[in-house]
Image (cartoon, rainbow, N blue to C red):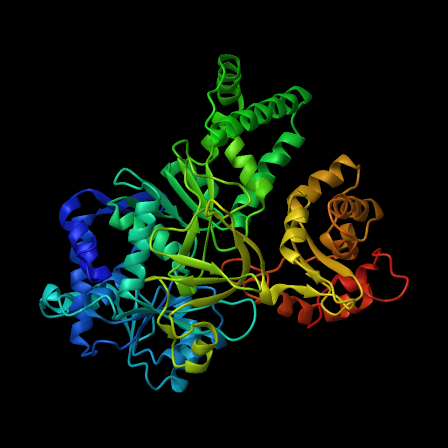
Amino acid sequence: MQDATSLGQLFFQVAKERGDAPFLKWREADTWHEVSYRSFAGRVRSLAAALHSLGLAPGERVAILSENRPEWLQTDLACQAMGLPDVPLYSTCPGPEILHVLKDSGARALFVSNAEQWNKVAPLRAELPDLKFVVSFDRIADAESVHLLTEFCDAAPAYDVDQRGKAIGRDDLASILYTSGTTGEPKGVMLSQGNFLSNCESILEHIEIGSSDRTLSFLPLSHSFERTAGHYVVMAAGGEIAYASSLERVPTELREVQPTLVLGVPRFFEKMHARVMAAVEHSPYYRRRLFRFAMAVGRKVFQRQHRGDDIPTALRWRKEIADRLVFSRLRERVGGRVRLLVSGGAPLDPKIAEFFNHAGLPLLEGYGLTETSPVVACNRPGALRLGTVGPLVPGVEVTIADDQEILVRGPNVMQGYFGRPEATRAVLDENGTFHTGDVGALDEDGFLSITDRKKDLIISAGGKNISPQKIENLLKREVTIADLCLIGDRKPFLVALLVPDYAQLKSAAAELGIAWTNRLAMLGHEAIRSLFAAAVKHANAELSPPEQIKRFALLEEAFSTENRELTPTLKVRRRVVEDRYHQLIDELYLPGNNGALPTHVLQPQA
């Protein structure tokens, strides 16, 4: 792999070796289809030749606005083979953000997946003078200016793609990834061919991944975690990638695809944990007791394995019973073949990691940023330390500044922010060291811990620095809470906006003998509010007085990417939430308010 100078060259090398081995799977009309490495390489070459026919010069940008699907990767690899940096956009991006990214990057061509995505771009064309060519993966009726991918490829004259690839070096720009960001306008992170390739090499040296591995892709390919770890790494290892048809179908398709690797953000694993715990809560007494027995056994086995101790015969027998009666069912939920779960993109609650590891499903937490291509550190099988993001991957250096900020240096660090030299200088010093903005520590064994985000600290009116992540993770363990946002910057105390898990809430209401009518009515019910008051009290018991939540409100509507309250990787944009619910937040801080709010303030303000 180290002799490849571009991602396109790497892919063609692997495709030649793997030949007719399966590469990609996707679902259409209830049927799974697949394409081999050899066949997909032909598709990539065909599209690369078509891109050449447009007369684009090396370094000119090509944007991709699409959901995860084979054509996304086909477009990406064709761009990499031709030295055309691509600019991925999240499929959930609204029109104004699409306009910003296309204008800022100066994209010359755009690939869209379907009519839904094109309809967001069409009204913007007059404001995009640099955009000259649009291609769609699916046919779009009444859109004469949009070319169909297959026809675009078929019409292109032959071209020696390999010859073009020889001129592409590791320092050449591969992609501009616009950070979703919890604050501020997205900035274009410039990642080179060498940034991506070095990170793939580091990951493969750090964690064993091979041609027998298969993953189910459901995190956005526009995000560097899925793109590097979920695609380029699996591709470099000669493995197989299946595309989930939708987020809603992921639980079903995990069982159908039977992956060996599952990459997810913490919210994915939190929801999986919540579903399991809810099922346990509503099961007969003997099953609840059996589950507790199995988890206790799993904990003892995990602890002994972690210390390198032998497992006594009696404990081994108990483990076999727990595995047969409980843990085998959990494994079936993720297809029955999973050997590694990997969490990235945001901090993972250590209790969630404990649950999966004690159940015999190794869940490894890692750490990285778009600016680092992205992986900086990751736990490994056999070198797992819960509560940390693991040891550094080979070739990456980390130092901890005097103010505990994590500083990263290595071949994976970005070239800078596109067209923003001042923003680049603010985070990238003259030695090429990237200032992450994250706060953490390295222990004596080289395991990295992330304690907070410098810019995400809540500073109370009394001057207390409060970490919201720890508090939010505590509350997310409660099965009735789907999401939340803490408020308290420059305020006398913390308050919380809680998004109920309505499926769990309906079950709880039924147990309380409350007839379900509608969400708003239920949230105003005293017994329902008491459930959440108990959940907040339970979390507060583990917190210091400044960290405790004094008042809360229940939200009828979940946070969403469409409303920009969530980033595409499901992190809460605190400032957006504060702005949308400003009136509700003001009421929470009224003197004498005890959190029992009248139902009319539960609606967000326009």
